Amino acid sequence: MTKTKGRAEDPSPLVYQCRLPLSTHTVNHLAGLLRRHLKAIRSRWRILPPGRIAVIVLAVLRHDQRLADMAGGNNVSESTVRRWRDELIALLAAQAPCLDRALKRVAKTGGEVVLIDGTLIPTQRRTGKANRRNYSGKHHHHGLHFLALTDERGRVIWISAARPGRTHDITAARHDHILALPLPITSSALVRARVP
Image (cartoon, rainbow, N blue to C red; front, side, top):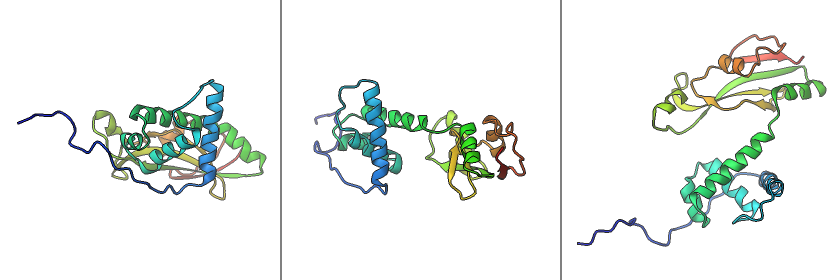
C-alpha cells in the first residue's frame, strides 16, 4: 500500500464566478486609491492591475471568502491576497475624518443636531482566549462594536474604530472623548447632541 502525503483533490481546481452587489464607482474609487498609493511608494508593478486587485479585496470583504480560495482562483498566493486586503483597508482608513473635523463640517453646513449610536457588527466566532472579549452578552453573538455619528437625515458623518463586542456605548464614547465635547448628553442608547 502506497502512502501519500499530498492532498486528496484534483490538481485542476474548479473556479466559480459570483456577483458583487457593488457599484462601479466603488471599484473605481478603490482602484484609484491604490494607483495613487503605488505611485507614491514608487512601486513598479503588481502581479495584477489595480482594478482587479480592488475587485478581489472587495470580494473578500463582502463575502468573507477564504483568502486561499480567492488566491487560487486568481493565480496568486494567499499571503499576496492578505497583503492586498490589509493595504487597501489601511488606505480607506486613512481617508476617514477625525471626530472634531466631522463636527466642524456639520456646523459649517448649518446642521444643529447629530445622532450618536453604537452598534454591533456580527463576526464569525474565533477560537482562543483573546476572542472572548468579542462576545456581546447583550446580543448573544460575537462581533465588533462601533459608534456612529449621523446627521438629522441619517447620513453617516463619522464612525469609530472597531472595539471588542462586549464594549458598552458609554465606554466607547468615553474612549473617543465624545463626552468631553460640549454636547448635551441625554441617553446612552441614542444621543441627540447639539453641534457646538
